[in-house]
Each structure stands twice: as structure tokens, then as C-alpha cells.
Amino acid sequence: MDILKKLMTLADGQVLYKDLRKRISETSVAIIDDESGQGDTDKVWSADKTYNELSSKINEPSEEGTNGQVLSTDGEGGRSWTTVDISNKADKENTILDTTLSRGRSGNTGTGSFAFGSSVIASGEYSHAEGIGDTGRGALGKADHAEGYQTRANSGSGSSAYGAHAEGHRASATADGAHAEGTSTTASAEGAHAEGGTTTASAQYSHAEGMATTASGKYSHAEGYVTKATATAAHAEGYTTTASGTYSHAEGMGTVANHAYQHAFGSYNIADPSTASASNRGNYIEIVGKGSASSAKKNARTLDWNGNERLSGDVYVGCNDDSSGGTKLAKITDIPSIPIDDTAGSGDTDKIWSADKIVSELSDKADSSDIPDISGKLDAPSVAGTTGQFLSLNTFGNPIWKDNTNVISVTVPVMANSGDTPRYANVGVNLVRNRLSDKSNVIGYNSATEKYYTSLSYTLNSSNVAISIMILPGAPSGSITLFITDVNPE
Image (cartoon, rainbow, N blue to C red):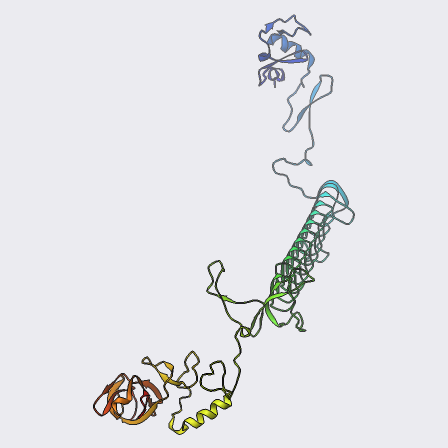
């Protein structure tokens, strides 16, 4: 191995003369002068001169080294081959550690643990701690992980407790699988997760996030600012909301959902006053708050478990797409009351009779045995009639109120209809033709089918009226009572 020749071959074009390296590119003229010495910065030695000078300064080993040895110097120009023990050195490309790795470790050392930083503690088996530690803080349990500033991860001492994770600034995860991150957060139950600032997740699999939130019910979730989810699977979000009922949900500002399955939203609602426990239903399924502060709570709407809805405002219908406009539905209190006066008579349109007076008057005017029972067979019109009107049918079979009180009735026989379509029959009714008016109407009542219908038409003859009657499919033989209304008096 020709060490001197290798030293003469320099990758960047430098040449070596005495104790000074000089780049050829840094001088405009390089004069070879083997007589030059120290101080002659514009001259260089020839290769032969340089080789001889170096040979006199460096003593090569007399023998070739073996595989794995390195060349060492005695500080006076003498060199030799040396064997170096590298069995405890890490391979920079494939490092495998069988024990622990430490820098700045404090306290006990866990098997297979990693500690790196300042006063860090990794005392749990296979634990990991990095950053800045403190007494009683670090990765203290099996497979725990603590990083940042004075964080604490301690999954516990049970055989199945491991894997707590704390990171950030004095975050603390102190249960199996718990996770705390951020500033002064605490996850103290199995699988709990706390993140943000001063949040607390203290029940199994609970989750607290944001600022100063608390999730203390199993599987609960609190998020936002100073929210609390204190019951099983409860959810509180927003600003200072509280979900204390089982499976309840509170959102918005200052809202409270204090009974099972309840939903409260808006701002500062009045809580459900029910005395039932938080795990049972209260009075309401849903409450919408409209309060302005904790000292000024109000409800805009409630919906109870019977489906009854109560509003503090009005209801508008037919609104625009942006909810503007529309018609306000009137309240009962907006409708003027009509006084009851049994002494009122014709022309008193602003008064009404009592029910007793109405029954008495009708009893004097009609024989109930002459009027068929139409209960359950004819619906009343959608609007109320006025005094003296009677119930009739229009040509479409719809009930209407009629003004004229002149009504006559006649019963006519009909034959059975064994077919499956309506059949029509013309019958003659003895009636002076001048008793009919252009408003006359015929209502038929079939006692066999207990159905009401109107005639399709009537024809005026010299001495009677021919009326077309509809016989329904399957109707047996019987009779039809015809009520002819709006007739002229005799």
C-alpha cells in the first residue's frame, strides 16, 4: 500500500508543500523550484521533491494490516496498524439496541426503555421519555410514552395496563390506554382522551377537548369552553353548557340538558323542572333557550314527550325562502268573543243562542221522527252556518249550509241493483211545478244502504216532477226518501 502516492493525488487539485496547502486555481503562476522553502508562496516543489520530503517525515508500517484494522499514529510520524473493538458501536444504517438508550436520564431505568433530554424518567418496561422531566413525572408504566415538559404517563401496575401517552406541558395520562396532550390536561380513566388546555377526561373512554372542559360520564364528550358532560354518553359543546342527563345533548351558550335523551340548545334555557332522576325522562324531549345570561334564563320553545309543543312567540305560515314575510296565525285570545243571549232574535248578528236554547227551538220546529238519522254518514261543512240555515248537499255530494227553510219530503220505492255500477231510475213526484225554484235541490236517503246522495236532474212536467235517482251497486229493494229543498210555499 503506497500511502505517499495516494497522498499526492488530491481530489480538488491541491498540492501539498511543507505545512501549507495551496489551490492551483488561486495563483496565476506556479513555478516549480525544488530549492524553495518556507515563505516562497509563489513556488512549488516537483512531485519527486514532495515525495522525498514526505518519505522522510512519515514512517509507514513495515507490514500490511489485516481486515478490520485501522492506521494509527504515535504523534511523532510513526504509524502502525491497530485493531479497534467496535462490537458496542451502533451501525448508523441499521441500529439494534438490546437494552436501553439514555441521555439525561434520571431515576430508575426500565427494561428496553428510552430516555433522552434533561432529568427525564423512563422507569417502565419499554417506556419512552423525552424532553424535560421532574420528580414523579415521566414514562412510569409499561410501554408508556411521555414527552415535552414535565409530562406524566402512568398506565398503572396491572398486568394488562400499558400504553398511556402524555405529551405537551405537564399533561398527565394515568390509566391504561389513556391519552393526554396540550397544557395541564388530565386523562385519568381507561381509554380516556384529554386535549387542549386544563381539560379533564375522568371516565372510561370519555373525551374532553378545548379549554377547561370536563367529561366525567362514561363514553361522554365535552368540547368548547368550560362545558361539562357528566352522564353516560352525554355530549356538551359550545360555551358553559351542561349535559347531565343520560344520553343527553346540550349545545350553544349556557344551556342545560338535565334528563335522559334530552336536547337543549340556544342560549341560557330554563332547565326541565321534572323531579325525575337524570337517567330517566323529564318533562321535555327538547328545549330551546333564548335567555341572555345565567341570571336571565328564558325558553323560546319546548316539546314534551306527548308531542305537545309550546312557543313563547307567534307562528307564521307561507313565509319566503329566507323565513321573512308570511302570515301570522291568530291566537284564540285574538278572536273576539261573541256574547250568548237567548233573547236575541232575527237581525242580532253579534249574538248567539246557548246550546239549550238551540235544542229547544229546533224541537218546536221539526218532528224528529220525520228526519232520518244521518250521524256518521254526512260530515258537516267546513264553515259554520248562520241562524236559520239547514244542512244540504251540492251537486258534487258535498255538505253545504242552505238559507231557505222550505223543505218537503216524499218516499218512493226503488228496485234492487244487483249490478256493480250505479243505476239510475226516474220517478215522478206529485208536486205543483210552480213550487220549484231555480235553487231547488234534491237530497236522497236510501234506508237500505244508509247512503245520502243528490239527484242528477229533475224534469218539470205539467203536474209533477220527474227526478233521476241513483241506485248504488248491490242495493236491495227498498225506498228512497227525497228531501226537496228551496221550494215555494203553497
